[in-house]
Structure formats: structure tokens, C-alpha cells
Amino acid sequence: MLSTRIATALAVVPLAVLGMLFLPTAAITLVFALLMLLGAWEWGGLMRLTDTGRIVLTLGVALLIFLFALVRTQLWLVAADNLLVGAACLWWLVAIYWIARFPRGWAETMGRTAVGVAVGLIVLVAPVAAVTYLHQSDQGPLLLLTFFFLVWAADTGAYFAGRMLGRHKLAPAVSPGKTREGAVGGFVAAMLFAGAGAWLLGYSGDRLIAFMFLGGWVAIISVVGDLSISMFKRHAGIKDSGTLFPGHGGVLDRLDSVLAAAPWFVAGLHWLPSAV
Image (cartoon, rainbow, N blue to C red):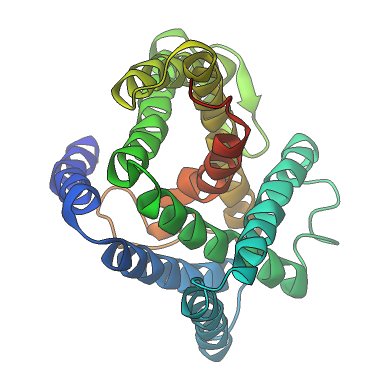
């Protein structure tokens, strides 16, 4: 299993890096939108929808992505994009509450199909807007690449810290394998990489320090994304959301951290001190 995971990563990561560096923003948006449509199909499985229901959900996500892309050039949509990203950020904060109490009250609230579908629409559409914003901004390709490497650094740091030092369970009812020590390792790794990324982006002084703390928050909220998808999977009684990535599972299994971190990374960039 580990060898399959490594082989998949070695095949996918270089392609992702080259794409972020050299593809135009429209192509990046299209690729990520297609991934989110696959994620929508998997989300329908988490909601135990019929095939017809999963098709309707996927079409709904496609329609929302299309509508946001269609009028993104209009000034008024800047507020709409911000509202979408803000709604996603709010959900990921609410998810912390559910992680802390899972499974108490889950079936009666989040386990309801209508609620789960509504959450899915937000968490699957918002990352497309966030990725588009990052790639089309100043230093866009490098900024987007920095974001993904932050998520990967957090995941890698958490994995190795958890394997070597993990003793105390982080959220045993949701994911017994995750430890507090692993979460701290991911936090530290992300902050260190954020410092390197800030330097490459030309940040200095207060902006560099703030970017490092943003990297730490990305690590924290990426764990929330991971655990949130785990809650939905546990309620649905499945281990993996799909089989697209051998050894890694489906889109939601592989990009659960990105779903949560992308909106918050965009929000955090707006709060960074101005460059001097």
C-alpha cells in the first residue's frame, strides 16, 4: 500500500507542479473544476444518494462553478466571490465543533441529506474560486505552488511526527490514527516552509512573519478538512470516498485538506500586512 501511494505521488505531483507553473489560469480553473465535479459525485456517495441524485448534485456544482466563472470579470462578483469564500471559511470553523463532539448529534443534523448536500455545494465550489484567485493574482503561479506545498508540508510533517512521536489521540472518535504530536509536527513544518515560501515571494519584516503564521493556520485547518471528510465517511460507513488515486482513495480523500485550506489561505492573504 505504501509503495502504491508513493508511486501515485511521484506520478501526480510533478504534473501538478508543471501545470501550476506553465498553464494559463483558465486551464488551472478547468482542471480543478473537473476534480471538484468528481468530488461532487463522491460527495453524493457520502450522502447515500442514488445515482440520479449524485448526477443532480454534480450538475448543481457544475452550474455554480460555471456561473461564478461566467461573470467573474464583472466588478460586482468580487463581492460574490468573497461571500462564497467567506461562507466556506465559516463552515470549516463550524466543523471544529462537530469534530469535538462527533458522533453526538451528527445523525440528526449534519447526517441529514439536505444539510450535507448544502455543505457539499459550498465546500466544493469555494476552492475553485480560491484557486482561480491565487493563480491570477500577482506572482500567481508561485503563490499557488506555495499554497499546495504548504499543505503537502503540513501533511508530511504530521505523518512523520505522528509515526515517531505520536502518543495522544487527536480525535479518536473520528480518526483513531491521528495524534496531537502529529498535528504539532504538521504545524511546525508548515510554518517553516511558509518562511521559505515568503522569502521566495519577496516578503520581509512583518509580512514574512504574518505569512509564517498563516502557514501554521493552513496546517491546522487542513487537519480540520481531513477530519471533516472522515466524519462524513464514518457516517456513510465507507473507508474511501473513491478510487481515482491508487493507494490514496478518491478526490475527497486526496484533496480534503485543500478543500478547507484554500478558502482560508485566500482570506489570510487579505489580512497580511502591506508590503513595504
